[in-house]
Image (cartoon, rainbow, N blue to C red; front, side, top):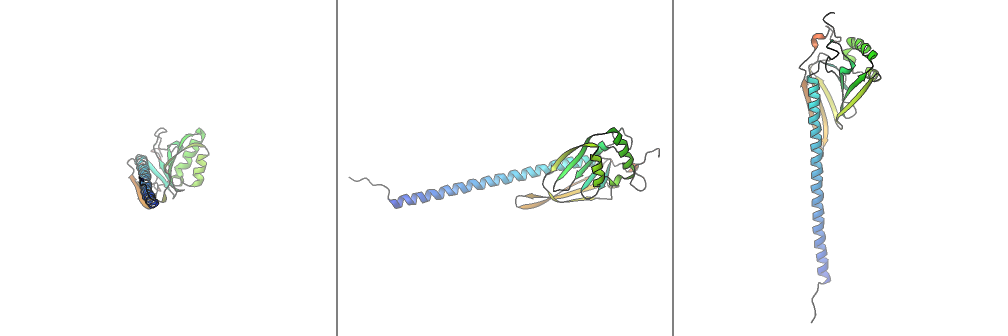
Length: 212
């Protein structure tokens, strides 16, 4: 009695069907992984935007002046802590830098005491030039700098204010982010609540004390 087995044709058909099933499973697994990676990337970028919006909005909202917006830097006088002397101190400044395809905050953690007085004398007459690269480099040479990167990869950053600094009270920062295969436009807008415009002279480029 002869036992009946698989023919060569049947084995080839079985192998072909199995290959098709395995290819379909592999394609589905790759597609699901791609969707998951895409979702994670989008979620991460949106989380960065939310964090940056909160940090920048709170900083500007509670600051005293927008000293300068010169295209690549936004200079904020955060508070008068030295102590409430109506003068700008290096440690009271923050630079929101928008150049180089990223948005980051530059603050000063320490500064030489002798430089503080020199800087305040400079700042009194040149508030709206604090964002110039020469002035910033000069400040950094006498201070310890702390950087906080908020948006590491963005493009087409644009800064708009309702008036020229330091008379500006509202500011808007818009930028593009690449999400998957599309470019999405974001905007951070906020308004000063504690604007110290009463300290400015008639030209708006110097701080004056009540005694002046």
